[in-house]
Image (spheres, rainbow, N blue to C red):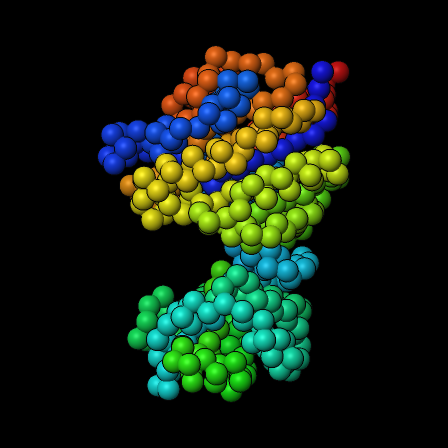
Length: 411
Ligand code: ZN
Ligand code: ZN
C-alpha cells in the first residue's frame, strides 16, 4: 500500500538545546506530547540539518530546502518572498522589500520604529498607491499592507539592482539614513534613488493623511514614515507542480512562509483566526490542512509560536505551547492515504534566542514506511531512528519515493 497524498508539517523552531529551567531537558523533550509520540512510534524517525551541518538556517532558506529548492541556488533575500506573501505578485526581476510604518517627529528623528504597533494600515497604503508616482524614473511599484505595522514594497522596471542599504536606523532618536547603493553598479544606484524617492513621496502623503491626524489627536504616534529593508531580486522558480507532478497548498500565518509557498506555485489557503503566534487557532489550521488534502496532493503547513518562545528565551512557555500544538494535532492521527512528515525548520534554542544549526527531529509516517523503534518525538530520541541524519533537501526526494513518484536513476 502506498500513500497518494503528502502533508509536510513544519513546527517552526520547535527544537532546542538543554534548558536549565527544564532540568536539562529541551522544551520538546519536557513536554507531554502523546500525539507526536504516537506519530514517531508509527513512523521512521531521524534528525535533519535543514541546510547543512553547522549552517544556521533562516526560516526562508530552510523552507526552500525542505521543498527541494536549494537555497544557494534560489534564495535572493527575504524581501521578494515577504512581498509575495503580503499579496504582491512578484515576477522575475522585480525588487522586493519589507517595510515598517514608523514615526518621525517634527525634527525628522525616528521616535517609534513601529508607529505604536499600528494596525489597520490599509487606508494609508491605499493613499500611497494612489499618490506615489515613480514614472519619472521609468518605474512602477506595488505596495501592500501586511499584519500590524508591516507592509511590503516591490519595484518593477528595467535595470534595477538589489544591493542597496536600508533607511531603518535600527534605533530610535536618530534621523533615518538615506538608502544607499552598496556597489558602484548603475542598477543598484537606480534602485537606491527609487527607494529614496518612494520614501520622500510616501512621507508627504502619510504626513497629511486624515488617519494620521486622527491618531495624533488621540495621542497615538503618527505612521508618517516607511522604513524599508531586506531588498532582494525576485528569481525564477520552477513550479512545484511541474517539478514533482503534485498539486499543492500552503497553510501558514507567517507571510514569509506563505510567500515561499506562493513563489513555487503552492496555493495559499488563509485560515481565519491564525496569527503565527501562541494565540493562533490551531484547530482551524489542522482542519484546513485535512480539508486541503481532499483537493490537493501536497500540503505544507507551518505552525509558528514555538519559534517565538525560543526567540524570547522562554523555555517553560515553549514547552507549554508545544503541548498545545500536540493536542491540536490529534485529528492528523486519523489520516489515511497520506504520508505525514513532521519536522522543524531549524532549532531556536531559548539559550541562544535565535536560530542555531543544531539538527532538528523529523518523522515520516504513512503506508509502506518502515517503522523503527523510536517512540518519542524529541531531539535525542529521533537521533536513534531509521532515517539517521539527513539534510533538508533530502526530504522531498524521500517523500516522492515513498509515494512511488520518484524517477529511477539508471536502468
Ligand atoms: Zn523558522
Ligand atoms: Zn525564528
